[in-house]
Image (cartoon, helix red, strand yellow):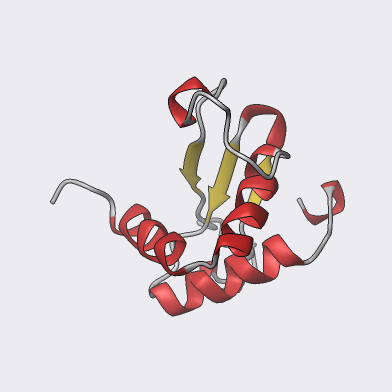
Length: 105
């Protein structure tokens, strides 16, 4: 399949989320806990996933240690390339349930 493994894991994790966790995820990425009335195709800007990587040698954290972040003004999820769905789910749940705002970025 031509779908990136990180994106494939994200879909798997989101499918496993409860309805409440899906609302928290949506709020984390878009600042709104509900989808648009006309559906996600009406969301502007479109929800986008950016795979972020810590390629810098001076960066002491591994990708597995980083939490996902979001830019809600542009509906952007910044997602490290976790090696497993389990780790991705743990990190996403920690990020979306932390109640932290801009200071998490």
